[in-house]
Structure formats: C-alpha cells, structure tokens
Image 1 (cartoon, helix red, strand yellow):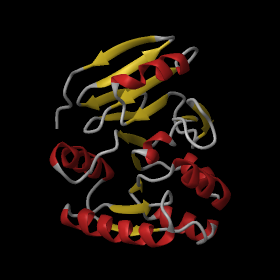
Image 2 (image 1 turned 60 degrees about the vertical axis):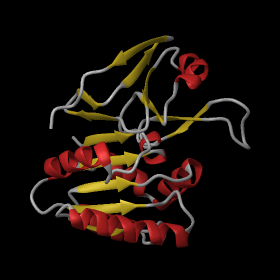
Image 3 (image 1 turned 90 degrees about the vertical axis):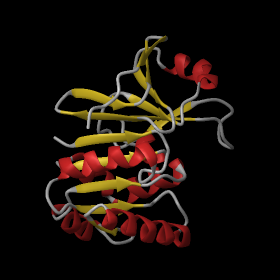
Length: 214
C-alpha cells in the first residue's frame, strides 16, 4: 500500500514544509528516486517547475525527473518501477485531472506501492472525489473524480471562511481541511498530521492540533 502525503499548498522546501518533505523521502528509502508530475501547468511553466523541483530534491539527497502526459503508458510503467516517490505538483486541478485520466497514469498510480506526495491541487486530486471551489464552470463547490487513492477528501489552503461549503460537502463523507503550512499523512490505515488540520464528518468539524514528531 502507498504512503500518502497531502500538503496544504505551501512550498515543500521552505520552513516547516521541508520537515514534511524530509520525512517523506526518509520513508521512500535510501537514495530515493522521485517522479515529478507537474501536470497542472502549461508545458513551459511545467518544465520550469520541474527544473526547480529537480534541484530542490537534489539538495535533499534525492534524484528526481519529470514525466509528461504524452510519454505513453509503457514509459510511465517503466519510470514508476524505478521510482520510490511520486510528487504531484500544484497547479490547475481540472487540467491535472484530465492529463492523469487520459494518459493512463491514473490507473497506474492506483497500483503504486511507494510514497505519493501531492501539493495543493495535487493533494486535492489524490482522493476518490475532489472538492473544487467555485470557478468558471460552477458557482459553488462541487465534486469531480480524483485518483481514488483514499475514500476521504481533502481541502488544501483551507481557511475558516470555507466552512459553509466544506460543512455542506461533508454530509455523508469525511473531509480534511488542510491550511497552508499543514499536512495530512496516511499509510497502512493510520492518519497523522503536521500542524493544525480540520476534520469534517457529517457536518461537524473537529480540529486536530497535535504536531507531527519527526
């Protein structure tokens, strides 16, 4: 079973974010290899982001390389076999979802057994259902299909101003509101977190305050 890291939408290489990234790399193993998926960005911006991430992971003792939606399923399977961790970079959730689904990467990630870390929109799409904020396509929060790695949903960049929508969406399901600077971790059926995380279940909110021990 994969070990999942949901980041609230902050720089994973600065301040408290780097502690979480170091823990994820430690769980990935010795000399970890990271597969980068900056698929929520236009290609030029994605290539710049990939270069930044490669350098940042190198500074932490890992090697990293990107894959692109047009690489093909055989290439994806090959690079996943040698990858200890997959990093879903932040970006546009709809663009990322479409690329993951039509490229065949979504199905491959459902069988992946390493560490999966999602930042912002990347974290949003890791669950079965992703809760999207109002945009040009909808005037209220709405659900789209995610990667189906877990059955709960997450709201990165959570603030209390979002409670009206999140409480509504939590009817019949569990949601976690993850503020910037916080993270939720899940593996082997066990949840842990870094920084305050808000759990919503059946319209009720609970604040998880315990700090992660590194």
